[in-house]
Length: 465
Image 1 (cartoon, one colour):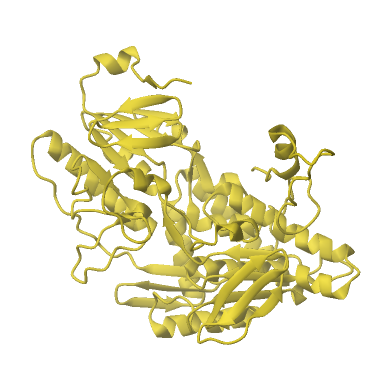
Image 2 (cartoon, one colour; image 1 turned 90 degrees about the horizontal axis):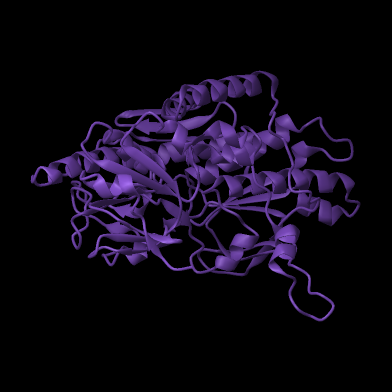
C-alpha cells in the first residue's frame, strides 16, 4: 500500500509546533503530561494501547497480579489533555533531516521528536534462545511465562517418569540483577506457599528454583553487603544460587552452563527458563543516523538532545546519558526516564522561544529489589535497608508510580490479600496448551510444505491477556 501523508484538516490549519513522542512508557507519558500547558500539539505513538508498569511484570508472570492491574489505556490516561492525539501505530523509519516519521501506512511530519521506545531483551547474538527462555518486557511475555510456569506443575502432576518430573519442577532464572532476583524469589514463594497444598501427586514445595549469574554475586550494582543480604534472603526462600556460571546453550532440554573461569559444560534439565540477563535499546534507534553505544542506546547531549539532530530528543532506556561527575551512563530505571522527560519538555518550550537547552540535573532516587514475600533490599542516598522494612518501602514506591488511583487501590488490596492468606487469584492458564515449555514447531503438510499463516497462528500463537 502506498504511503500517504497524515494531513487531516485540523492538523493542516494548526500552526502550533508539532511534538511527536514515540513510546507510551514512563518517559513518553511523562513528557506528554509535562507539555500539557505548552502551546504545542502533541502526537503520542505506541505499538500497544496501554502504558505498562514494567517493574511489576514478574508479578504477572508468577500469578501475583493480573495484567490489567499493571497496565492502563494510554487514551484514558491522557483523555483530559486536549493538546494530545494518541495513535496506535508503529514507526518503520525516521528521516531526521526531513523531520519525518514513516509509519506502517503513512508519513508523519514533526517539529520536535522525542524517542522513548525503551529496551528489548538482549540475547547477545543468541536470538534463538528467546523461544525457550522468554524475557519480561511485555504483557504477552509475562502471560506466556505464567502459562509455562503453571502448566509445568500441571504436567508434573500427571507425569510418571521421575526424570521428566524433575525437569518440569526445575525452574531456571538467568541473570542476577533486580529482575532476576525478584523473579526467582517470586517463583520460590509461589511453589512453597501458594501452590503447596494444591496438588496430590507432587509436592510443589520441592520444586527447584535456580538463579544463574555469571559473576560471583547477585545485584552487582548494589553495595556488597546488600548483595550478601539479598543472597541470604534468597537462600532462606530455598532459591539455589548458581554463581560464576555462563550460559552456553538453551534448548528444549534445559540450560547448559560452563564456569566463567573455564571448565566443562553441564546440562541442567528444565522446561521453564526465564531470561533476565540483559537488555538493549529498541531497534528504532538505529534508524536515527546518530551515535550509538554498544547496546544500541543513543549517545545524547546533556540536555537529552542528539548532537546530529538538535530537534530529536532521546530519553529512557534507549538513551545513553553520561554527563554526571563520574561520567557513568544513567541506569535504565523509571525515575531516570521521568526526569529526562521533564527536562526534554522544558527544553522543547525553550527551543520554541529561541532559548538554548538546559542540561538534565539528575537526582539519584536509589535502587531497590524485592526478594519474595516480605523481603527486599533498598538503597537511597546514604539510607540502606534490607528485609521487611525494605519490602514496605518497595511497596510504597511502586504504588506511588502506578498510573491512576484505581490501579494503586486494586494492586494494594491484592497484595494485602495475598500476604495475609498466601493466595494468588491470577493463577489462570490460557492458550489451551497443556505442555510445558516452548510451543512446538509448526507441522508440515502432507506435501512437505509449511502450513498457511492462518494455520500457524492457530497452532503456535501465544495466549494474550
